[in-house]
Amino acid sequence: MIKGLAITPPVLGRISIGKIVEKNGKRLPEKDDQFTITSQIQNKDGWVKHPLDEQLRAKAPNQNQKLRTIPVRMIFNDPELNLRAEYSLFDRQTGRLICSGNGETCQRLGQNGVEQHPCPSPDLCPLAQGGLCKPYGRLYVNLDESDEFGTFIFRTTGFNSILTLAARLSYYHAASGDLLSCLPLQLTLRGKSTTQSYRTPIYYVDLTLRDGTNLQEAIMSAKQMDEQSKAAGFYQEALDHVARQGYGNASFEVGGEEGLDIVEEFYNDESKTEYQQTHDLTHVQDIQKGLQQSVQALN
Image (spheres, rainbow, N blue to C red):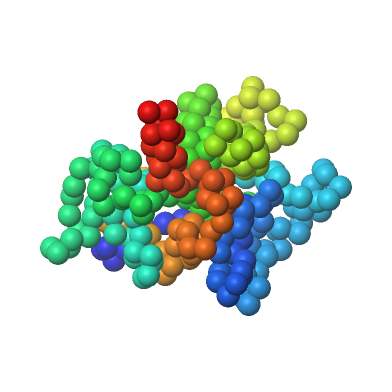
């Protein structure tokens, strides 16, 4: 295995709740109230939709065919292998990942290569001032069960999605007795309003059991699937072990090519309207400034 190259799950396509639009000659991110499943190919209009998008949209229960639930399966039992998340600071020009941390320790590019430093989180890190560092999560899920190891990736810098997905994965993993990969799950788009969003809905991604399935039925089905897989010679523990080794084969999981797409989609703050900035809760620095202004007004 080539050292310094992170081996991540094979990606067949993307799951997003937004898109890139062109405004005044600039490409800017725009949020959406539904899922879109795309391939890994782009044209002048953006990412080309994957055939699964149309298939799932045709089954959508609402008349306008907005895709707000997607049936999925995890390919790993360990929650942290399915959802990768850390604080990330990218070079806005090159898309290169400069620093990656977990709130306790971080790995940062320095004069002598990759250096180890304490990670105080973006709120307290001098390098992260100005909203340069955000949480960055990647959820790998299986949609097409004919390719058991092929995944579709949902990428996000939203606290709501990352925290909700992390909690759900941990809970389902514990409740099923380490049979997370065998549970019938679905991604669900949820909305909520807060004072900071001026009561306007913001959308985030949740992970639930598929419609019409309760937890007891899901666990019984998972146990049956696990027994059948073991009888066929499938070794889930070995798969998780190999995946863990692959993630740890490099200092950073994100490469420069992917980094450019991430910067454009999640870190492009130029020319945003005040409305967009207010509703993007992943901009930690904007929230901090608002709190500071409130305190000053009270004084």
